[in-house]
Image (cartoon, protein in one colour):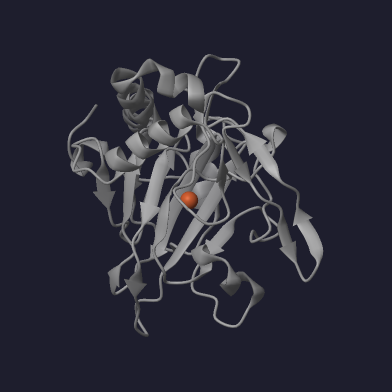
Length: 267
Ligand SMILES: [Fe+2]
C-alpha cells in the first residue's frame, strides 16, 4: 500500500486518451490500493468527457442513473440551495460521514466503481478521507474473524425505506456489509450514519461495527486525506470515504463531477 497522496497521484497529459505509461501507473495503483488520483490541466475542466473517458479506459461503462444525476448519469456535486437536491447532504456544504457509495442500492445495482473529478474546489475544506475497504476487512478479520461472519450476514445492515410526502421512493434495503463478487473481489456496503440505518440486533454485529467505527476514527496510516484540486480526479473501486464540511466564496463554488458504476475498474 503506498504511503502518501503523492504516491497515488499520476500526472496525465490528456485524460481522455492516456498514454500506455500513464494507464499502467493508474492500473497498478488500482490493483494495490483500489484507488488512484490523476491530475491533468485541460483547457476546459468543465467537461464531463474527462471523467467519462477515464472510467471507460478502465472498462467502467454501466453508469448508475441515481436520482441526483443528470440525464447523462453524471452528478454535479455542488451546493443546491432551495432545490430538492438541497435536501440531500451531498448537495450541501455539510460534512458527510464515512460510507461507500450506493449503500442503499439493491443487490442488482451495487456500486463497484466510482470517479470523482474536481472542476472547482471550495475556499476551505471539502476534503475527502479515503480508506481501501480491503484494509478495513483485514483489520476486522485480524481483530476477530467472527466480525467478518457477522458482517457477511444478509441482514447485517438495513436501510429503511425513503418516504417523501407519503410516497415510497425506495423500499427497505437489507443486505450484508461485505460480499464477494463472482470475480473474487471484495464489495463493501456501509454507512456510518446512526440515523436511517438498522443494524442486525446481535452482540457480534455491535462489536464489529464498533471496531470499524474506532478504526475509521483512528490515525491509521492507511487513511488518506485529500483535497481534490481543480483538474484532479479520483478513480476507485468504491472505497470507504467521507467528506469534510466546506466554505465557499464567489470564486470558489465547489463543483465535482461524480460518476457511479456497476462495474469495477478492470485491473
Ligand atoms: Fe460518496
